[in-house]
Length: 201
Image 1 (cartoon, rainbow, N blue to C red):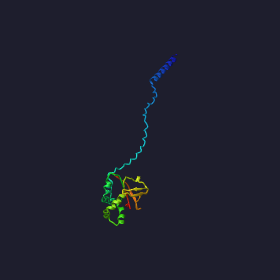
Image 2: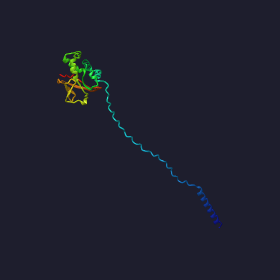
Image 3: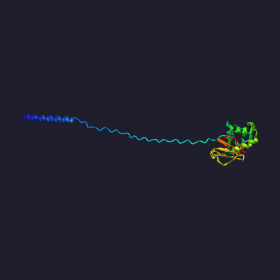
Image 4: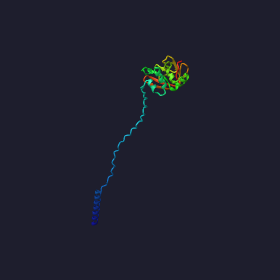
């Protein structure tokens, strides 16, 4: 009987000890990892390539008259001297619009040879100059793009010339001159250079 009581006490004591251990022992509950707040990154908008607009062509504003342009051109010295000798340079300084087909210095060489005169003798023949020089002038402004190809064009001396689509001028004698430079703009018109002197008769 005593043994049974001792055994019962031992069992109760062991049970109480086990319960005490369970109470003091803390079991760590698994903790969920803190949710890290993700920063919302907005997609970078693609930048469209902007094509550069072509620069508008700037019209060069003319600042000189036809006479002044001729006087400063090193290839038009004989023409300038001839205009001054004939007193026609003042006409090309006025505000009235003109077109001049300007023979270069080289263009006068065959004329001097044909006439058998020097440059000085040619410049002294004002009657000839007053007939020939106005034949190179139109009493209006005609740019290269506006040349009426294939039709007779009246000049300032009343005689006509014709111009082909190849920019070749035919004068009253049937001789030809090539337009070698175009659209030299002046305040009172335009200059086109040519490689021969035009003859009205």
